[in-house]
Image (cartoon, rainbow, N blue to C red; front, side):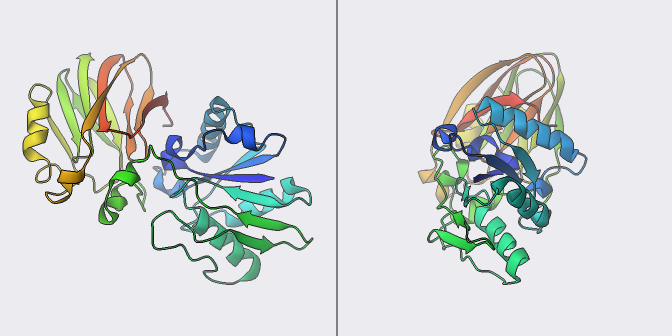
Length: 294
């Protein structure tokens, strides 16, 4: 069977393209990691149902969903019980893209089973485990940890090591709601930008790492503002890093109902009413819409 670990905070960035083809006929257990990053007000049942719907859209038919936080060792026993329940004596392959916390999860599983601390060492490059790990199970089967699959659309690939904290929050995010009039812009540090082009005045809720500084300005002149202040008022990137930072590319959307606009690996903005908006993200980083998670 296959255990597919995804990052709840970055579902779109942690989907493995073409996975349904590779696992055909195998049971897939979907493990949503980093549950602790979402606001506590969100009910787990709602997240599980939302993950199941998104998985179906990707052509995956998981047998079940389990939510965990590998970092806090939350629900590790439940993950093990579900694996035992569904594997029926078979080997288990754990798959996931880089940075979803797969090694942390496997470490937590090994610890729960054996009491050993830190069996897997993650290499010094973010998101790369050194080798395939095998964990023997009682009946002679194994759990195999497979190397993380690199997803090129993620924001993490465009940041320096010290800025990675902005794209992998470690604690519960505090959503911020901004009442915007048409023709206002919200800068997401220097990493991206959100333009409210047209529609009724309304609240837009931003779900990003708590330390990312958001800055509101007028849409008119926003590009000149970005060029002038990138690396100083708008960071990250800082003044040294901005030379190598890709240019921002515009993605325009007409929104009809409650929708998340996601910058892959960075976070999302929830739009509740009818609006014409634009999201600017570094060239190469995916921007997608999805049914609102919250």
